[in-house]
Length: 604
Ligand SMILES: [Zn+2]
Ligand SMILES: [Zn+2]
Image 1 (cartoon, rainbow, N blue to C red):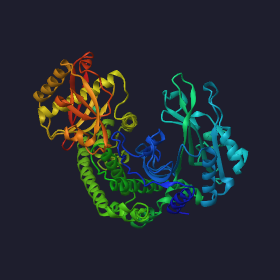
Image 2: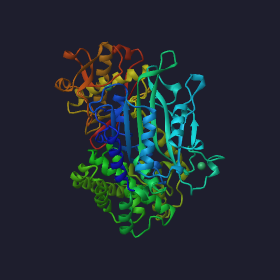
Image 3: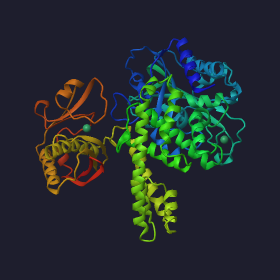
Image 4: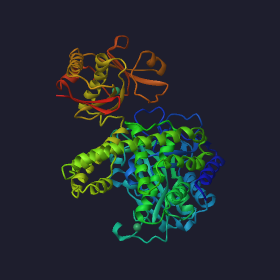
């Protein structure tokens, strides 16, 4: 059974159980300018799970396209992909554990036809110290459904507890959470690898078990005294991996063979290599297959390859795919030809892809061309480095970050110029530091671009608003924000401007910001209709989508504000509070891309 058939069966099945089908939300979250991509089926439903009433009722079902950029470097094994679809069904204060577990079991065994003896489930073991009981209710339901007792395993809150903050201990007061029950499929022909522990079990990482779905029971709310009470309205959230269910329906543990067949076939034809030829070649096929599919869906949802934020993620996907196409000796330009195969697979479920096909292909082709030009420039740079007789770790790292050269290519190209010495260790050290930083950056995104809501970060956030306005005063009104990131130590803003700022311009910007801090102006939050905020000329982030009613922060009362921005806060109450920590200072001003400058600034 193919994924497309499973998707349709799932929607039909839950419709027969009184659910309303929701269309998939776009990969770029609507009404949420702070999150880069939709990464789960639950994400667009969060406001409703927290109590808002849903216009389509309280039994909902969908198949949501998802993208997780944090998995980019993990792609290459048999189960990780950046793009996937998540099957989801929800009960908003309607049915609970009994119905949910019965529905899921019936769907998997009767509709998909999975052999019962291959299924395992897990339940929450309880946490005595917190007075959170063992979920024996789910255990008993599974048992009655026919699950053998030894296929029902209990795990603690690190595995079988859901809340937005993670384990129960981390939940703030007023936060909902609850136990969950996961379903696993056992690949009985895969022998357990003792490297992962003595005995195999559903959560073992050896590959014998594959998680295919999870039912979350939003049952509790954390009280202010740290105890847990029952939620007045209990919800169910189910998420199931569509591609994974297709894998187990075919008893095939390679997600790519099951879900990326058309692309793999096309690649085999144009490069003359076989997918299973060697581990290295299989990995290259997988990376191209995943990245091209993700890029097609992202461009289809309006993200163009570019230098910052979402665009940069698409750029990385395409460029990485090009590199691995080259490794497979796929002729240049062939990436665009994959669009046809990908759209053909999805056009029934996602008709807009077919409509945008021409444009998607054009973007892919153009980005590949841009990348090849960059590679040529990189070779020149490498020759310059090679002039010294050795490539240092820093040289190699610069080639990697600026021109996208992977280490193997650097070694290969250096070898062709007689250079034997490449500081591989030095490169790896820098790469490790870099990926830790970028991972921290992408996690931050989920908290709204702010690292935290500490006093220091809050001060810098208000200074950030003052800075943007000061830049517009000094450089011109056409300056707009293109990206931002604030930590406790410093603020960073990316803004549209074509030239390097002069020392005089920087000094003037600093002077204006510090003047506004000294004036100790009140910072005011106002909720208003989006149109009204736009009429007031409130600054908003380029490309971001906003809800009908927005939060606006102004420095000064709205009718005579120094600055007005679409913003969720938090901010200081008076600009003078920034001054208590010191003086505003620009540390660095540099280019990040054509027409985009970056400033890093501190209060010290
Ligand atoms: Zn195992
Ligand atoms: Zn703001």
